[in-house]
Image (cartoon, rainbow over all chains, first blue to last red; front, top):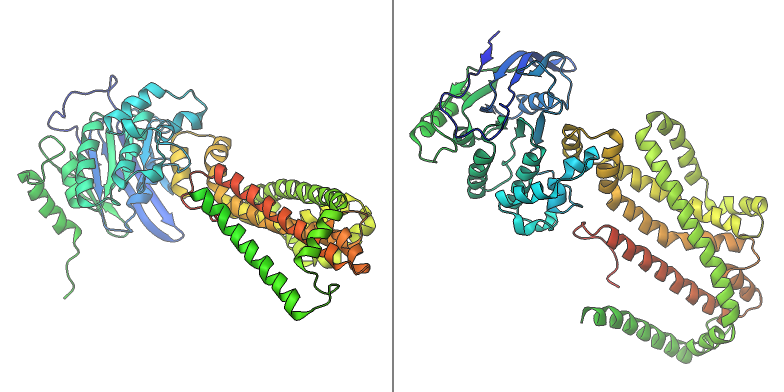
Length: 262
Length: 255
Protein backbone atom coordinates (compact mmCIF):
# COMPACT_ATOMS: atom_id res chain seq x y z
CA UNK A 1 0.00 0.00 0.00
CA UNK A 2 1.69 3.15 -1.22
CA UNK A 3 1.59 6.03 1.18
CA UNK A 4 1.62 9.37 -0.50
CA UNK A 5 3.11 12.03 1.72
CA UNK A 6 3.43 15.50 0.46
CA UNK A 7 5.98 17.69 2.15
CA UNK A 8 5.57 21.42 2.49
CA UNK A 9 6.30 23.36 -0.63
CA UNK A 10 10.08 23.46 -1.20
CA UNK A 11 10.06 27.06 -2.33
CA UNK A 12 8.36 29.87 -0.46
CA UNK A 13 5.14 30.83 -2.19
CA UNK A 14 5.04 34.51 -1.43
CA UNK A 15 4.06 36.11 1.85
CA UNK A 16 1.56 34.02 3.80
CA UNK A 17 -1.55 36.20 4.06
CA UNK A 18 -3.37 34.03 6.58
CA UNK A 19 -2.64 34.86 10.23
CA UNK A 20 -2.94 31.25 11.34
CA UNK A 21 -1.06 28.63 9.31
CA UNK A 22 -3.52 26.80 7.07
CA UNK A 23 -4.49 23.31 8.15
CA UNK A 24 -3.48 20.40 5.96
CA UNK A 25 -5.51 17.36 4.89
CA UNK A 26 -4.77 13.83 6.03
CA UNK A 27 -6.50 11.01 4.16
CA UNK A 28 -6.10 7.62 5.82
CA UNK A 29 -6.96 4.19 4.35
CA UNK A 30 -9.87 5.56 2.39
CA UNK A 31 -12.08 3.08 0.51
CA UNK A 32 -15.13 3.55 -1.68
CA UNK A 33 -17.40 0.92 -3.18
CA UNK A 34 -20.44 1.17 -5.42
CA UNK A 35 -22.30 -2.07 -4.81
CA UNK A 36 -19.69 -4.78 -5.30
CA UNK A 37 -17.44 -2.61 -7.47
CA UNK A 38 -14.46 -1.21 -5.63
CA UNK A 39 -13.60 2.31 -6.79
CA UNK A 40 -10.57 2.61 -4.54
CA UNK A 41 -9.23 1.01 -1.36
CA UNK A 42 -6.49 1.92 1.10
CA UNK A 43 -5.98 5.39 -0.27
CA UNK A 44 -3.52 7.55 1.69
CA UNK A 45 -2.69 11.15 1.00
CA UNK A 46 -1.08 13.77 3.17
CA UNK A 47 -1.49 17.34 1.96
CA UNK A 48 0.70 19.74 3.93
CA UNK A 49 -0.86 23.02 5.04
CA UNK A 50 -0.57 25.87 2.57
CA UNK A 51 0.29 23.75 -0.47
CA UNK A 52 -1.56 23.58 -3.78
CA UNK A 53 -1.98 19.93 -4.71
CA UNK A 54 -3.49 18.85 -8.02
CA UNK A 55 -5.09 15.46 -8.46
CA UNK A 56 -5.04 14.21 -12.05
CA UNK A 57 -6.70 11.26 -13.64
CA UNK A 58 -8.82 10.10 -16.53
CA UNK A 59 -12.61 10.38 -16.40
CA UNK A 60 -14.38 7.89 -14.17
CA UNK A 61 -11.34 6.98 -12.09
CA UNK A 62 -12.97 8.27 -8.89
CA UNK A 63 -11.42 11.74 -8.51
CA UNK A 64 -14.71 13.53 -7.95
CA UNK A 65 -15.87 10.86 -5.51
CA UNK A 66 -12.67 11.28 -3.54
CA UNK A 67 -13.11 15.04 -3.42
CA UNK A 68 -16.75 14.67 -2.35
CA UNK A 69 -15.66 12.47 0.56
CA UNK A 70 -13.02 15.02 1.58
CA UNK A 71 -15.69 17.75 1.38
CA UNK A 72 -17.95 15.69 3.63
CA UNK A 73 -20.57 15.28 0.88
CA UNK A 74 -20.25 11.52 0.59
CA UNK A 75 -19.43 8.73 3.03
CA UNK A 76 -16.49 6.40 2.40
CA UNK A 77 -16.82 2.62 2.84
CA UNK A 78 -13.79 2.76 5.14
CA UNK A 79 -11.05 5.13 6.27
CA UNK A 80 -11.16 8.74 7.36
CA UNK A 81 -10.26 12.26 6.39
CA UNK A 82 -9.04 14.77 8.98
CA UNK A 83 -7.15 18.02 9.19
CA UNK A 84 -3.45 17.82 9.98
CA UNK A 85 -4.42 18.42 13.62
CA UNK A 86 -6.63 15.34 13.52
CA UNK A 87 -9.89 17.30 13.60
CA UNK A 88 -12.94 16.92 11.43
CA UNK A 89 -12.82 18.85 8.17
CA UNK A 90 -16.35 20.16 8.59
CA UNK A 91 -16.29 23.95 8.74
CA UNK A 92 -12.73 24.15 7.44
CA UNK A 93 -13.54 23.50 3.81
CA UNK A 94 -14.69 25.66 0.91
CA UNK A 95 -15.87 23.87 -2.23
CA UNK A 96 -15.87 24.82 -5.90
CA UNK A 97 -17.72 22.52 -8.25
CA UNK A 98 -17.48 21.77 -11.97
CA UNK A 99 -19.88 24.61 -12.71
CA UNK A 100 -19.91 27.99 -11.00
CA UNK A 101 -22.97 26.97 -8.91
CA UNK A 102 -24.08 30.58 -8.60
CA UNK A 103 -27.70 30.71 -7.51
CA UNK A 104 -29.44 32.25 -10.53
CA UNK A 105 -32.03 34.16 -8.46
CA UNK A 106 -29.46 36.02 -6.36
CA UNK A 107 -27.32 38.98 -7.45
CA UNK A 108 -23.56 38.54 -7.73
CA UNK A 109 -22.90 40.12 -4.32
CA UNK A 110 -25.69 38.09 -2.71
CA UNK A 111 -24.08 34.97 -4.16
CA UNK A 112 -20.71 35.94 -2.72
CA UNK A 113 -22.33 36.30 0.73
CA UNK A 114 -24.60 33.25 0.35
CA UNK A 115 -22.69 31.34 3.05
CA UNK A 116 -23.66 33.93 5.68
CA UNK A 117 -27.28 33.82 4.58
CA UNK A 118 -27.33 30.00 4.66
CA UNK A 119 -25.91 29.93 8.17
CA UNK A 120 -28.25 32.67 9.37
CA UNK A 121 -25.38 35.08 10.03
CA UNK A 122 -25.15 38.78 9.26
CA UNK A 123 -23.67 39.18 5.77
CA UNK A 124 -20.43 41.20 5.67
CA UNK A 125 -21.15 43.51 2.74
CA UNK A 126 -17.90 45.44 3.01
CA UNK A 127 -15.81 42.27 2.74
CA UNK A 128 -17.91 40.99 -0.15
CA UNK A 129 -17.37 44.29 -2.01
CA UNK A 130 -13.64 44.11 -1.35
CA UNK A 131 -13.47 40.55 -2.70
CA UNK A 132 -15.50 41.47 -5.77
CA UNK A 133 -13.06 44.29 -6.42
CA UNK A 134 -10.16 41.83 -6.15
CA UNK A 135 -11.68 39.54 -8.79
CA UNK A 136 -12.51 42.57 -10.96
CA UNK A 137 -16.27 42.50 -10.60
CA UNK A 138 -16.78 45.60 -8.45
CA UNK A 139 -19.09 47.18 -11.02
CA UNK A 140 -21.21 44.03 -11.49
CA UNK A 141 -22.15 43.49 -7.84
CA UNK A 142 -25.87 43.81 -8.48
CA UNK A 143 -26.02 41.96 -11.79
CA UNK A 144 -27.68 38.56 -11.98
CA UNK A 145 -25.41 35.58 -12.81
CA UNK A 146 -27.22 35.14 -16.15
CA UNK A 147 -26.00 38.59 -17.20
CA UNK A 148 -22.34 37.61 -16.81
CA UNK A 149 -19.97 35.80 -19.16
CA UNK A 150 -18.59 32.39 -18.23
CA UNK A 151 -15.29 33.87 -17.07
CA UNK A 152 -17.02 36.50 -14.94
CA UNK A 153 -19.19 33.83 -13.34
CA UNK A 154 -16.11 31.81 -12.40
CA UNK A 155 -14.56 34.94 -10.90
CA UNK A 156 -17.70 35.49 -8.85
CA UNK A 157 -17.43 31.86 -7.71
CA UNK A 158 -13.83 32.50 -6.62
CA UNK A 159 -14.97 35.56 -4.65
CA UNK A 160 -17.66 33.43 -2.98
CA UNK A 161 -15.04 30.79 -2.11
CA UNK A 162 -12.73 33.44 -0.60
CA UNK A 163 -15.63 35.02 1.32
CA UNK A 164 -15.98 31.73 3.19
CA UNK A 165 -12.38 32.24 4.37
CA UNK A 166 -11.71 28.54 5.01
CA UNK A 167 -8.14 27.25 5.32
CA UNK A 168 -8.83 24.39 2.89
CA UNK A 169 -10.21 24.87 -0.63
CA UNK A 170 -11.43 21.92 -2.69
CA UNK A 171 -11.89 22.43 -6.43
CA UNK A 172 -13.48 19.95 -8.81
CA UNK A 173 -12.43 20.91 -12.35
CA UNK A 174 -13.60 24.43 -11.68
CA UNK A 175 -12.40 25.93 -14.95
CA UNK A 176 -13.17 23.09 -17.37
CA UNK A 177 -16.16 24.89 -18.92
CA UNK A 178 -14.10 27.94 -19.95
CA UNK A 179 -12.35 28.58 -23.23
CA UNK A 180 -8.56 28.22 -23.25
CA UNK A 181 -7.75 31.94 -23.01
CA UNK A 182 -10.28 32.78 -20.32
CA UNK A 183 -9.12 29.71 -18.43
CA UNK A 184 -5.49 30.90 -18.45
CA UNK A 185 -6.52 34.27 -16.98
CA UNK A 186 -8.70 32.67 -14.30
CA UNK A 187 -5.84 30.32 -13.38
CA UNK A 188 -3.59 33.34 -12.78
CA UNK A 189 -6.24 34.89 -10.56
CA UNK A 190 -6.87 31.66 -8.64
CA UNK A 191 -3.15 31.08 -8.05
CA UNK A 192 -2.75 34.61 -6.71
CA UNK A 193 -5.82 34.66 -4.47
CA UNK A 194 -5.53 31.14 -3.05
CA UNK A 195 -1.92 31.58 -1.96
CA UNK A 196 -1.39 30.47 1.62
CA UNK A 197 -4.41 28.19 1.64
CA UNK A 198 -4.36 24.42 1.37
CA UNK A 199 -5.82 23.56 -2.01
CA UNK A 200 -6.77 20.18 -3.40
CA UNK A 201 -7.81 20.59 -7.03
CA UNK A 202 -9.00 18.02 -9.52
CA UNK A 203 -8.35 18.43 -13.20
CA UNK A 204 -7.89 16.32 -16.30
CA UNK A 205 -5.88 19.07 -17.94
CA UNK A 206 -2.12 18.48 -17.48
CA UNK A 207 -1.36 22.08 -18.46
CA UNK A 208 -3.65 23.43 -15.76
CA UNK A 209 -2.08 21.07 -13.22
CA UNK A 210 1.43 22.20 -14.13
CA UNK A 211 0.53 25.90 -14.04
CA UNK A 212 -1.02 25.83 -10.58
CA UNK A 213 0.26 22.89 -8.56
CA UNK A 214 3.12 22.65 -6.10
CA UNK A 215 2.63 18.90 -6.14
CA UNK A 216 0.80 16.72 -8.65
CA UNK A 217 -0.69 13.34 -7.85
CA UNK A 218 -1.91 10.97 -10.54
CA UNK A 219 -4.87 8.74 -9.79
CA UNK A 220 -5.23 5.69 -12.02
CA UNK A 221 -6.21 2.02 -12.25
CA UNK A 222 -9.16 -0.05 -11.02
CA UNK A 223 -9.40 0.04 -8.10
CA UNK A 224 -7.68 3.39 -8.29
CA UNK A 225 -4.26 4.04 -6.78
CA UNK A 226 -2.42 7.28 -6.15
CA UNK A 227 0.97 7.62 -7.81
CA UNK A 228 4.03 9.13 -6.18
CA UNK A 229 3.68 12.92 -6.06
CA UNK A 230 5.47 14.94 -8.71
CA UNK A 231 6.82 18.18 -7.25
CA UNK A 232 7.39 21.29 -9.29
CA UNK A 233 9.79 24.06 -8.43
CA UNK A 234 9.15 27.75 -8.82
CA UNK A 235 6.32 30.09 -8.03
CA UNK A 236 2.81 29.69 -9.37
CA UNK A 237 1.15 30.48 -11.69
CA UNK A 238 3.88 29.22 -14.00
CA UNK A 239 4.30 30.84 -17.39
CA UNK A 240 2.96 28.80 -20.30
CA UNK A 241 6.51 28.38 -21.66
CA UNK A 242 8.13 27.65 -18.29
CA UNK A 243 10.73 24.89 -18.72
CA UNK A 244 9.65 23.06 -15.57
CA UNK A 245 6.03 23.18 -16.76
CA UNK A 246 6.81 21.80 -20.21
CA UNK A 247 8.95 18.97 -18.82
CA UNK A 248 6.34 17.91 -16.25
CA UNK A 249 3.51 18.19 -18.74
CA UNK A 250 5.25 15.68 -20.99
CA UNK A 251 5.82 13.37 -18.05
CA UNK A 252 2.13 13.58 -17.11
CA UNK A 253 0.93 12.87 -20.62
CA UNK A 254 2.99 9.67 -20.59
CA UNK A 255 1.55 8.64 -17.24
CA UNK A 256 -2.06 9.40 -18.16
CA UNK A 257 -2.14 8.06 -21.71
CA UNK A 258 -2.69 4.30 -21.62
CA UNK A 259 -0.31 2.26 -23.74
CA UNK A 260 -1.86 1.59 -27.12
CA UNK A 261 -2.93 -2.05 -27.48
CA UNK A 262 -0.95 -4.31 -29.88
CA UNK B 1 -43.89 51.56 -28.57
CA UNK B 2 -43.96 48.10 -27.01
CA UNK B 3 -47.06 48.72 -24.91
CA UNK B 4 -48.75 50.20 -27.97
CA UNK B 5 -48.09 46.98 -29.85
CA UNK B 6 -49.25 44.90 -26.88
CA UNK B 7 -52.54 46.80 -26.76
CA UNK B 8 -53.07 47.28 -30.48
CA UNK B 9 -52.60 43.71 -31.58
CA UNK B 10 -55.34 42.15 -29.37
CA UNK B 11 -57.64 45.05 -30.25
CA UNK B 12 -57.21 44.47 -33.97
CA UNK B 13 -57.78 40.72 -33.53
CA UNK B 14 -60.97 41.37 -31.55
CA UNK B 15 -62.24 43.90 -34.08
CA UNK B 16 -61.63 41.51 -36.99
CA UNK B 17 -63.42 38.68 -35.15
CA UNK B 18 -66.43 40.91 -34.46
CA UNK B 19 -66.62 42.04 -38.08
CA UNK B 20 -66.43 38.43 -39.34
CA UNK B 21 -69.09 37.43 -36.81
CA UNK B 22 -71.34 40.31 -37.86
CA UNK B 23 -70.87 39.60 -41.57
CA UNK B 24 -71.63 35.91 -41.07
CA UNK B 25 -74.90 36.54 -39.20
CA UNK B 26 -75.92 39.06 -41.89
CA UNK B 27 -75.13 36.93 -44.91
CA UNK B 28 -76.16 33.48 -43.63
CA UNK B 29 -79.49 34.64 -42.18
CA UNK B 30 -79.05 32.22 -39.22
CA UNK B 31 -81.96 32.88 -36.79
CA UNK B 32 -80.96 35.01 -33.79
CA UNK B 33 -81.91 32.29 -31.26
CA UNK B 34 -79.16 30.11 -32.78
CA UNK B 35 -76.50 32.75 -33.38
CA UNK B 36 -77.21 36.33 -32.29
CA UNK B 37 -75.29 39.13 -33.95
CA UNK B 38 -72.71 41.30 -32.16
CA UNK B 39 -75.19 44.16 -31.76
CA UNK B 40 -77.82 42.08 -29.94
CA UNK B 41 -75.14 40.57 -27.66
CA UNK B 42 -73.92 44.10 -26.89
CA UNK B 43 -77.48 45.05 -26.11
CA UNK B 44 -77.87 42.05 -23.77
CA UNK B 45 -74.58 43.00 -22.10
CA UNK B 46 -75.93 46.46 -21.39
CA UNK B 47 -79.45 45.48 -20.31
CA UNK B 48 -78.29 42.65 -18.05
CA UNK B 49 -75.30 44.55 -16.67
CA UNK B 50 -76.40 44.46 -13.01
CA UNK B 51 -77.25 40.78 -13.13
CA UNK B 52 -74.04 40.00 -15.03
CA UNK B 53 -72.01 41.91 -12.47
CA UNK B 54 -73.45 40.03 -9.51
CA UNK B 55 -73.13 36.66 -11.18
CA UNK B 56 -69.56 37.46 -12.25
CA UNK B 57 -68.77 38.29 -8.63
CA UNK B 58 -70.04 34.86 -7.54
CA UNK B 59 -68.05 33.01 -10.18
CA UNK B 60 -64.97 35.13 -9.53
CA UNK B 61 -65.15 34.33 -5.82
CA UNK B 62 -65.41 30.63 -6.57
CA UNK B 63 -62.47 30.72 -8.96
CA UNK B 64 -60.30 32.91 -6.72
CA UNK B 65 -60.99 30.84 -3.60
CA UNK B 66 -60.52 27.62 -5.56
CA UNK B 67 -57.22 28.88 -6.95
CA UNK B 68 -55.99 30.00 -3.53
CA UNK B 69 -56.96 26.83 -1.68
CA UNK B 70 -55.95 24.59 -4.59
CA UNK B 71 -52.52 26.21 -4.83
CA UNK B 72 -51.88 26.01 -1.08
CA UNK B 73 -53.08 22.42 -0.94
CA UNK B 74 -51.09 21.53 -4.06
CA UNK B 75 -47.92 23.14 -2.70
CA UNK B 76 -48.36 21.38 0.66
CA UNK B 77 -48.90 18.00 -1.04
CA UNK B 78 -45.87 18.60 -3.25
CA UNK B 79 -43.65 19.35 -0.22
CA UNK B 80 -44.90 16.35 1.74
CA UNK B 81 -44.37 14.00 -1.21
CA UNK B 82 -40.80 15.17 -1.70
CA UNK B 83 -39.71 15.20 1.92
CA UNK B 84 -41.42 12.09 3.28
CA UNK B 85 -41.05 8.87 1.29
CA UNK B 86 -43.52 7.26 3.69
CA UNK B 87 -46.14 9.92 3.01
CA UNK B 88 -45.44 9.61 -0.69
CA UNK B 89 -46.32 5.91 -0.63
CA UNK B 90 -49.59 6.61 1.18
CA UNK B 91 -50.55 9.87 -0.49
CA UNK B 92 -49.72 9.13 -4.12
CA UNK B 93 -52.50 6.55 -4.68
CA UNK B 94 -55.04 8.94 -3.15
CA UNK B 95 -53.85 11.79 -5.36
CA UNK B 96 -54.05 9.59 -8.43
CA UNK B 97 -57.49 8.37 -7.43
CA UNK B 98 -58.69 11.96 -7.08
CA UNK B 99 -57.66 12.52 -10.69
CA UNK B 100 -58.80 9.14 -12.01
CA UNK B 101 -62.40 9.72 -10.97
CA UNK B 102 -63.78 12.10 -13.60
CA UNK B 103 -64.74 15.42 -12.08
CA UNK B 104 -67.90 15.33 -14.23
CA UNK B 105 -68.99 12.25 -12.31
CA UNK B 106 -68.03 13.70 -8.95
CA UNK B 107 -69.62 17.14 -9.30
CA UNK B 108 -73.25 16.02 -8.77
CA UNK B 109 -72.23 14.27 -5.55
CA UNK B 110 -70.36 17.35 -4.32
CA UNK B 111 -73.41 19.53 -5.00
CA UNK B 112 -75.56 17.00 -3.19
CA UNK B 113 -73.26 17.04 -0.16
CA UNK B 114 -72.24 20.69 -0.02
CA UNK B 115 -75.33 22.38 -1.43
CA UNK B 116 -76.11 24.88 -4.16
CA UNK B 117 -73.90 27.54 -2.61
CA UNK B 118 -70.30 28.50 -3.30
CA UNK B 119 -68.70 25.64 -1.28
CA UNK B 120 -69.34 22.84 -3.78
CA UNK B 121 -67.98 24.94 -6.67
CA UNK B 122 -64.84 25.84 -4.75
CA UNK B 123 -64.28 22.16 -4.05
CA UNK B 124 -64.71 21.25 -7.73
CA UNK B 125 -62.25 24.02 -8.67
CA UNK B 126 -59.77 22.85 -6.00
CA UNK B 127 -59.97 19.28 -7.31
CA UNK B 128 -59.18 20.48 -10.82
CA UNK B 129 -56.37 22.78 -9.71
CA UNK B 130 -54.33 21.11 -7.00
CA UNK B 131 -52.97 18.21 -9.01
CA UNK B 132 -51.06 20.20 -11.66
CA UNK B 133 -49.66 22.34 -8.84
CA UNK B 134 -48.61 19.29 -6.78
CA UNK B 135 -47.06 17.53 -9.77
CA UNK B 136 -45.07 20.50 -11.03
CA UNK B 137 -43.95 21.69 -7.58
CA UNK B 138 -42.78 18.28 -6.38
CA UNK B 139 -40.98 17.82 -9.68
CA UNK B 140 -39.26 21.19 -9.23
CA UNK B 141 -38.25 20.39 -5.65
CA UNK B 142 -36.85 17.02 -6.68
CA UNK B 143 -34.79 18.40 -9.51
CA UNK B 144 -32.76 20.87 -7.49
CA UNK B 145 -29.24 20.94 -8.92
CA UNK B 146 -27.10 18.49 -6.92
CA UNK B 147 -24.12 20.85 -7.00
CA UNK B 148 -26.14 23.73 -5.52
CA UNK B 149 -27.17 21.49 -2.61
CA UNK B 150 -23.59 20.25 -2.16
CA UNK B 151 -22.30 23.80 -2.06
CA UNK B 152 -24.82 24.76 0.64
CA UNK B 153 -23.87 21.64 2.63
CA UNK B 154 -20.17 22.55 2.62
CA UNK B 155 -21.22 25.99 3.90
CA UNK B 156 -22.71 24.27 6.97
CA UNK B 157 -26.31 25.19 6.10
CA UNK B 158 -29.08 23.48 8.05
CA UNK B 159 -31.68 21.35 6.26
CA UNK B 160 -34.31 24.03 6.81
CA UNK B 161 -31.99 26.75 5.56
CA UNK B 162 -31.26 24.74 2.40
CA UNK B 163 -34.99 24.29 1.85
CA UNK B 164 -35.65 27.99 2.35
CA UNK B 165 -32.72 29.46 0.44
CA UNK B 166 -31.99 26.85 -2.22
CA UNK B 167 -34.68 24.25 -2.89
CA UNK B 168 -37.72 26.53 -2.75
CA UNK B 169 -36.32 29.25 -5.01
CA UNK B 170 -34.97 26.59 -7.39
CA UNK B 171 -38.43 24.96 -7.60
CA UNK B 172 -40.24 28.24 -8.33
CA UNK B 173 -40.09 28.04 -12.16
CA UNK B 174 -41.72 24.59 -12.11
CA UNK B 175 -44.25 25.78 -9.53
CA UNK B 176 -44.98 28.74 -11.81
CA UNK B 177 -45.86 26.53 -14.78
CA UNK B 178 -48.20 24.52 -12.57
CA UNK B 179 -49.84 27.71 -11.35
CA UNK B 180 -50.32 28.97 -14.91
CA UNK B 181 -52.12 25.76 -15.83
CA UNK B 182 -54.18 26.04 -12.66
CA UNK B 183 -55.21 29.64 -13.43
CA UNK B 184 -56.32 28.62 -16.92
CA UNK B 185 -58.41 25.62 -15.82
CA UNK B 186 -59.85 26.97 -12.55
CA UNK B 187 -62.88 28.63 -14.25
CA UNK B 188 -63.73 25.29 -15.92
CA UNK B 189 -64.14 23.72 -12.48
CA UNK B 190 -66.25 26.56 -11.13
CA UNK B 191 -68.54 26.81 -14.18
CA UNK B 192 -69.05 23.08 -14.30
CA UNK B 193 -69.98 23.08 -10.63
CA UNK B 194 -72.54 25.78 -11.38
CA UNK B 195 -74.04 23.80 -14.25
CA UNK B 196 -74.64 20.83 -12.00
CA UNK B 197 -76.55 22.84 -9.44
CA UNK B 198 -76.40 26.41 -8.25
CA UNK B 199 -78.37 29.54 -7.42
CA UNK B 200 -76.04 32.16 -8.92
CA UNK B 201 -72.93 32.60 -11.02
CA UNK B 202 -72.19 32.98 -14.74
CA UNK B 203 -72.73 29.26 -15.35
CA UNK B 204 -76.11 29.48 -13.62
CA UNK B 205 -77.00 32.50 -15.73
CA UNK B 206 -76.05 30.69 -18.94
CA UNK B 207 -78.12 27.67 -17.93
CA UNK B 208 -81.14 29.88 -17.23
CA UNK B 209 -80.75 31.83 -20.48
CA UNK B 210 -80.41 28.56 -22.36
CA UNK B 211 -83.69 27.26 -20.92
CA UNK B 212 -85.43 30.45 -22.08
CA UNK B 213 -83.66 30.47 -25.46
CA UNK B 214 -82.12 33.87 -24.64
CA UNK B 215 -79.08 33.08 -26.74
CA UNK B 216 -77.88 36.68 -26.68
CA UNK B 217 -77.70 36.58 -22.86
CA UNK B 218 -75.81 33.29 -23.06
CA UNK B 219 -73.30 34.91 -25.37
CA UNK B 220 -73.04 37.93 -23.07
CA UNK B 221 -72.30 35.68 -20.06
CA UNK B 222 -69.82 33.68 -22.11
CA UNK B 223 -68.05 36.85 -23.17
CA UNK B 224 -67.77 38.08 -19.58
CA UNK B 225 -66.46 34.66 -18.51
CA UNK B 226 -63.83 34.69 -21.24
CA UNK B 227 -62.69 38.19 -20.27
CA UNK B 228 -62.54 37.21 -16.60
CA UNK B 229 -60.48 34.09 -17.38
CA UNK B 230 -58.04 36.03 -19.55
CA UNK B 231 -57.65 38.78 -16.95
CA UNK B 232 -57.06 36.22 -14.21
CA UNK B 233 -54.45 34.48 -16.30
CA UNK B 234 -52.72 37.75 -17.13
CA UNK B 235 -52.60 38.73 -13.44
CA UNK B 236 -51.13 35.35 -12.47
CA UNK B 237 -48.68 35.49 -15.38
CA UNK B 238 -47.56 39.02 -14.50
CA UNK B 239 -47.17 38.09 -10.84
CA UNK B 240 -45.09 35.05 -11.76
CA UNK B 241 -42.90 37.07 -14.10
CA UNK B 242 -42.18 39.47 -11.27
CA UNK B 243 -41.48 36.61 -8.86
CA UNK B 244 -39.30 34.80 -11.42
CA UNK B 245 -37.34 37.85 -12.56
CA UNK B 246 -34.24 35.68 -12.76
CA UNK B 247 -35.59 33.12 -15.24
CA UNK B 248 -34.31 34.26 -18.65
CA UNK B 249 -37.39 33.34 -20.66
CA UNK B 250 -40.59 32.68 -18.78
CA UNK B 251 -43.23 31.26 -21.08
CA UNK B 252 -46.28 33.44 -21.21
CA UNK B 253 -48.44 35.46 -23.51
CA UNK B 254 -46.88 38.70 -24.75
CA UNK B 255 -50.01 40.58 -23.76
